[in-house]
Image 1 (cartoon, rainbow, N blue to C red):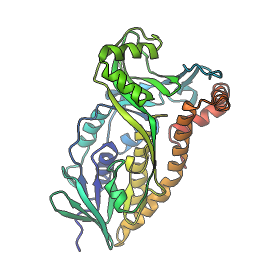
Image 2 (tube, rainbow, N blue to C red):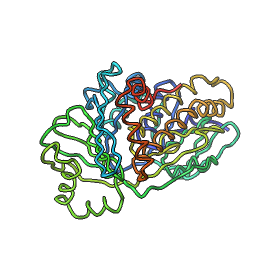
Image 3 (cartoon, rainbow, N blue to C red):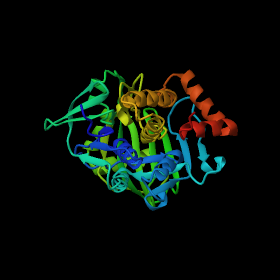
Image 4 (cartoon, rainbow, N blue to C red):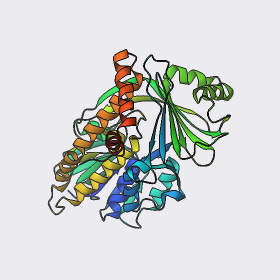
Length: 386
């Protein structure tokens, strides 16, 4: 049985495209199965380790040409709780960096990743996968047109409802929240500068992320029914709600894009790879947009996938199985650590019991007053891992 490529990557999102292009740039033959999708109007705040990975692998050039630097994070407890946390400012200069990271438009990143593809070694097809199975040393995917393709390693980057994950027998754990996220672009009277502003409300943060000039990207987490109701009432009702939530700290607000509401859930797996399958991005993990971990975690998947493939003897017929096992080993600690951090943080934001409020407020006081603890939190949030 002959193989069609070294690696087959399924899924056309940012993590899947980054995996396909970076593997091809590393000299492997890659088939990328990327069905067409609607334009991605969201933005991603990428921490410095992610930005450096993208630069090192040639996926982007100078981040200043395509994004907005995130130099500080300001947290404001806007809840009516009995025990409230102090207002806290985290500045990247405390850890010797000019910025924590950069805020990018997803559509711009997708375009740059595409442009970074090598002239040979990458075969991209606008076709969906309908079946996957392992046949000895090769993984076989069946496409919607009936074509069958084979490769030693198959990368599932096909999202929360991953067909590759299900066919490989990797069962996810999922939890759906009552909360959702409303996202859109805003024009403010007064700029947030390079500071990401987080107003913490009882059902989640209302975050303004710098987008250049007087623009900001909004991520508003609240009860899903409330967000959809405000959205349905029209632009003026939404604008009034935004003025209230922002406490008018930045003057008048106007909508610079349509708004979208996304339900929130978590998804985790016991292993990110086995038997010649490697899961990256939301096929392996999904969290609420807290702590800027979503795409950052996906790009750490891609970095470890590259490292696992490079550490594997590809002259062996079963190298795909060995690479997937090495990938799972490399990812296990980071996925467990980051998943625990994000889940704990999000649930603490929703906590209504006085002991939980006290713990959260005490934690922020500790971060505010103890520089060593604050630096440790910075390292974890930026993705430092063994």
